[in-house]
Length: 294
Image 1 (cartoon, rainbow, N blue to C red):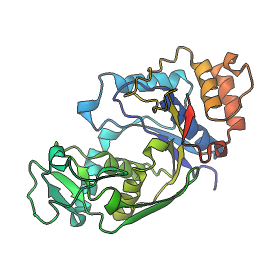
Image 2 (cartoon, rainbow, N blue to C red; image 1 turned 60 degrees about the horizontal axis):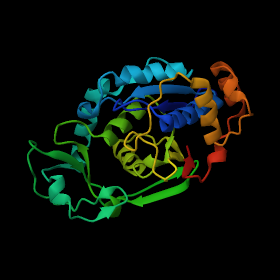
Image 3 (spheres, rainbow, N blue to C red; image 1 turned 180 degrees about the vertical axis):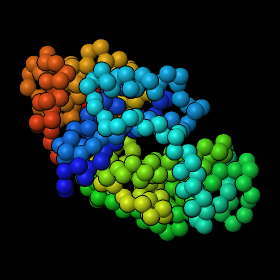
């Protein structure tokens, strides 16, 4: 890999404050990008207004700055790419159809790895756009990619997902289509993120192939878990980061990420901690791990 050819990214959604699990993902993606002399893009995924919290985007920027993260260029607001998202939707029209099925109507369907498996109810109904969602046909596609930490991955999308939504009934572009378009627009070559997103990557790889976009190299790090085994998240009560004790929390994040920082590193400055981390970062220590105690 030539210097500067690596483009990584961190893409939080402004549905609440960053938490410790977010810090792990940010650290891993940032350090891996810098290890390859690459660039690191910050993208705020603000395309779901009903779920967003007032001021969350500004708080994300403030907290990342407090922890010493340095992203390349200005932070990208995903909502600014709405026109390109909708152009991609149109370009996929030969492979899509409108669907008026409600969640209640589908509640009795089998559940696969990606949730309720859509049975194709509306596939041949030729519904006009209206109070509908847009689904993309998956056919007999088997999605495959080689994850740098979790190894070879494969999924029969028809069995685990069925045709999935790329435009919601409220006319918002669905996450999977938006993220594929934005990664392509930004030239993202590598994605380092939590293993909780591993399964959903298959939908993104499928959309990349349909759009003629290249597939980035993926690495899914283990997620941090509570003592009871639940994933550390906003939904499970993970406290938000405020940056008031950034040095200690950065040092702890490096320990959780199996980087074995020396005792006392938490007493150093944030700049000194980053200097140590950049010199010693080794993502391979996370290979095969699915979760780590927070």
